[in-house]
Length: 308
Image 1: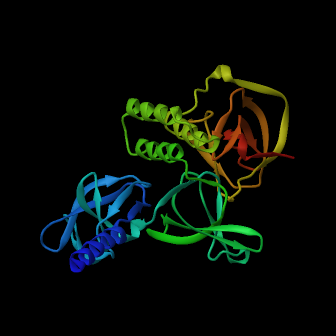
Image 2: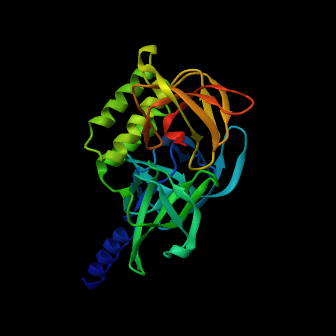
Image 3: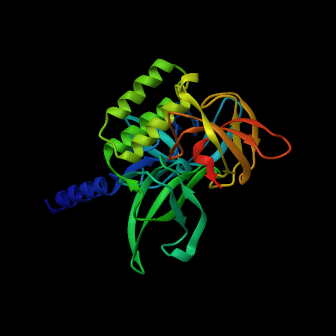
């Protein structure tokens, strides 16, 4: 009888140990199936933030098979999703229990200390796996994992414990936005964006949804939305990351007629009566003349203008 009880206990313990979740970190990551020859083949794409059941206590090595080549010994998590078994690359997912989404620019730290600051941050809309909280010198840091799109792998870093959300509605809305960006059907895109806006999301996520809608459909500027300034404004075109600024033939989605460097002197001669939100900034569009030898004319987003 004791042996039976011990056997049952070990079975229950085994289930509890392995009943863990895998969180997808990469947007549109690939789920793969076993090809019966030691390899995995593509089955479907899956959105970041999805949680799946982990079936193996440790990653497994299998070949990654495509129509063009076979890449041996890739590390995969063995998972169950919607009742079926799949494999997902270890570099694109992580073992975790809490999904979060960045809702404002969050500075990255290598360690839970301010002096380990990295010259990098996560943008709003980034899906993360939330880990332990560490208190350091009166500050709260949270260990996170995220998918680094520049290195094509997941990273472990720390952020100050603010600027993120674990609200399920916020995460659902971001997943809908991700799905929208993979579609070409404008009607379906609009429907999914409307669905995202109908959720009880925070203000920051709502802004992400609106920005996505504007990027896809463009603002509804017309000639009636444009006014000429009685007194032109002198100033500079400036971006936070020193990126070049597009000058367009018309507000919003007009053709790009040129680019200007940040800190370029410009003269504003007109503006729109409506605003647009881009990268968290809300402003009108400005009709400008570049104050240099090019005398370039066109429109720039007003969020990139600083008056002299």
